[in-house]
Length: 576
Image (cartoon, rainbow, N blue to C red; front, side, top):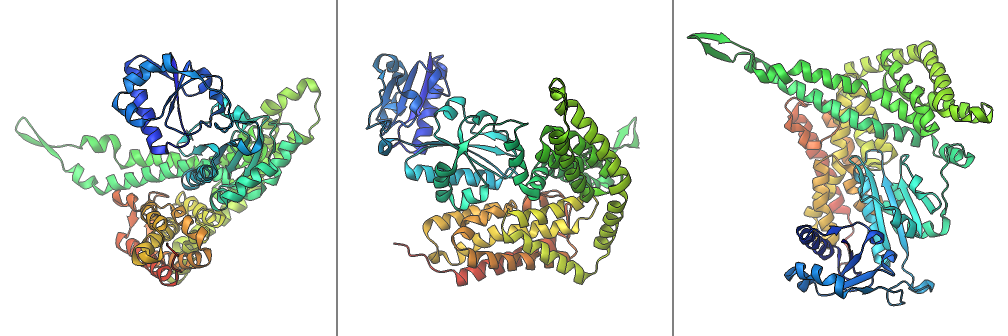
């Protein structure tokens, strides 16, 4: 027997999850099958009081358990009684499923995604869910994060939704929403202006029709702009950079213990014999560094490939990847990868739109003709036109960064640290971060130190401010401050966004000043960081940060200055 468990509107999210988990556990022992949708269920158990917002339960046999104490006391009895006590659930005005607009519960589904797939993705999802809950709407948000798809929307939920909200900063697959009214926005507005975005969704949504050859789809890609294409490339590149950076950092950590490992001795037949330790032989510095270097060698191809993919869809991927590989081989680096990625993407798009072919050959265009022509031209342009001058420029920049004096280092660090605090995960923040991460592959580690240290300041400062001037903050802000401290330690700048959204004219200047001071001090101390993520937890790997003292001091000073400054100028909340 298939059983679907649904929550009443008055039960609350915590009680609902606990009740569903309890029933699911007992159902397993009774060999009952718990399903994810009402359409495939034989019996539906409604947990708690209030209306049922899931339209799919209408016409199904539903057993309502209003008292949660009964459920937790004897869940087995609930499952046993359900088949005999369930009754057909009908549409009524009371259930919120009346045909009149004022009684109709609106249903929305949404998708969120940001370039890194971490903070903005989940914070925007939470904001949409909270706003929908305030309005009494049914809502489900699917996250396309760094670990894949979370809270996946089912076909039944898509079919019953009134509107689809796509709050994404990068390209995502939306094919399952074909034929539905769809509204596009970004994670920033969805997070900071949630109420306005939900209103606009119902006013401005248009029917979505995905088609690769449709001029509407093409124009939609063009409207994204150059920066959005870059963000798509960066989002696919970042996991490779993080993995490669951490593996290289681990190789240096093992290198620190090389001499200790080499002097291990054993006794064989009464004679001392010096032997190389097994741990070094298997995962020693040369082996780990080789893996990390290979991961880094894929960084630029991924960046170029997915910039081209963002512009021209799948036909642009192959020329972009090949152009990126040539950027590495010609030593044009990340800058060459960005340039050739745009070239490959727009070239593939041009061929797709402008090359006339007989209808019988149109099917060959995306899989044969466009990749062949675009890859050939992109490769020749990279080798004979773009590669050499960009390689020379990258060499000049690398030499200057490695040889810059203290004054220049402080200025550069202050600029990068301040940029990380301007929009906290937005375009300016991402530009500074991309600059720091891209230079790691050229063995230039100083800018990344300023970037990560500066990016940790906003959430740490806001968390500190809620502790220093606790009475000036409302209870929800005090709780946000605790979470902000943790996010700051993890190098998630977006932890300060709730504070910046409420009080931007005070929060942002304080954070920029603190971040600039942090970045300047970090590079004045000669700090170098060999990994592009991890926050303070990256320091657990020996040798990943040098020198540790100056690096930590810069974060402490900048965070204290920004936090205390905001605590002083913060306007007290009118807490009743």
